[in-house]
Image (cartoon, rainbow, N blue to C red):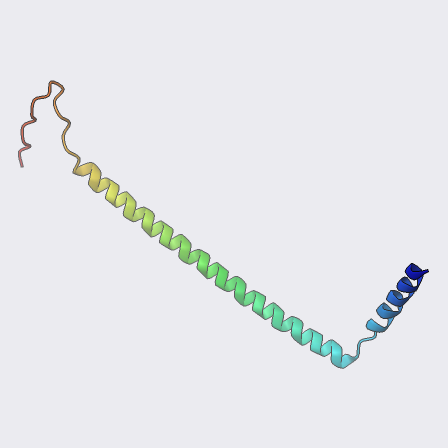
Amino acid sequence: MKKVLFLMFAAASFTFASCDSPKENAAEQAADNVEAAGEAKADAMEDAADATREAADSTADKMEDAADKMDGAAAPAAAPADGEAAAPAAH
């Protein structure tokens, strides 16, 4: 019996809730517009943040590559296998 009364109450609630006034519809539409504008702004900010991250990663990669090239150019000559000291390189 309680279930039947609850279902009848729920059905009546939906019936009254669906009767929106034009003023209420306008207010809901305005709220939806504000929400949509906020979402668009947030999406634009996320895109800008992603672009900044990608640019920083790219710059860091280029700097690391340049540092690796410097290390490769300045690498010391391998020591002789028999343990003798290597002769200094002529400059």
